[in-house]
Image (cartoon, rainbow, N blue to C red; front, side, top):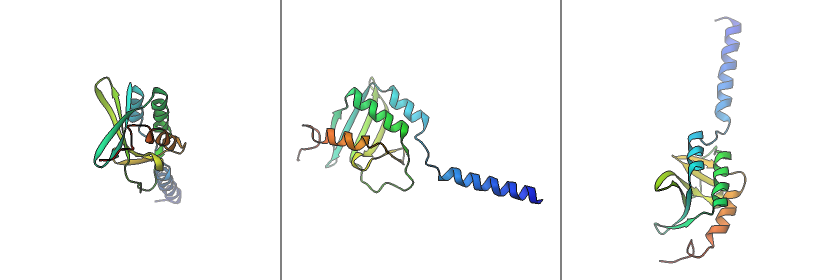
Amino acid sequence: MNRRSAYGLILLLASAGLVGCFRQPVPYEVVQRAREADRVTLTYVQFDREVPKPLSPSDAKALVEVISAARKQSSPASAAEMQRVYFHKGTNLLLTLSACFGANVFGIGGTTYEDTTGTLKTLDAKYQNEPGTANWTR
């Protein structure tokens, strides 16, 4: 191998390594499914039960924007799942994501993504204290 080929190989390997360092976005297909939904339900997971709360259209749109702007978290999430979000079109379930809104993270298919906008915390504060959502006992 000549010197020029060796430098080219080193440059190729270095650039491939750098690509892995960048935080990957949510897959396009997932974002499209979220955008197609006509109904989004947020559920708080408590005592192995889910307490559902439909999101308003404006909050659902804000959540879709969070999904489209989020990036893969570099380290696994340390926060426990507190919410699940279901995206429906008619009676069809399009997408389910697990989340910990208070920690600004959500997961899709075993991959954890981070919300850098703070929207998840805002939605958590809004829906957590609504009657019939999270403040109930067994």
